[in-house]
Length: 134
Image (cartoon, rainbow, N blue to C red):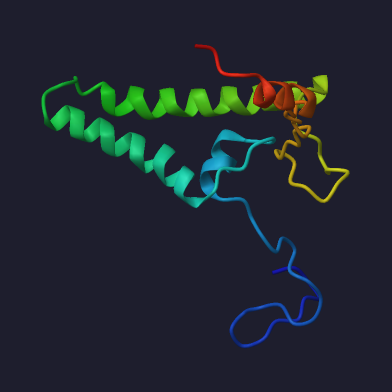
């Protein structure tokens, strides 16, 4: 607690704003992710899922004990590489735009309308008036 800060009985600051209202979750903070933000289920799958898979492989005697260290680290390296690649693509101008100009989502595509050729009425009338072949 710094000097001059007023706190209530529970220890919360009285008046003013909290210094950091929303902290990043642990996984993005550990990897120092700047360009991608995995949501809750993705963080669980990448973090605990990789460790759970490593434990399962070791207990089933399909991998050595080194898998407990190597597999989660390999997943973290791939996620960090993806973050770096996303940053590089945004700098190069090939990434998704920061704010879409239209009301559509950033990934939405618009395709031109395809017009199908209409059969000409002249050819149809010629076919109908021709006598059947014997």
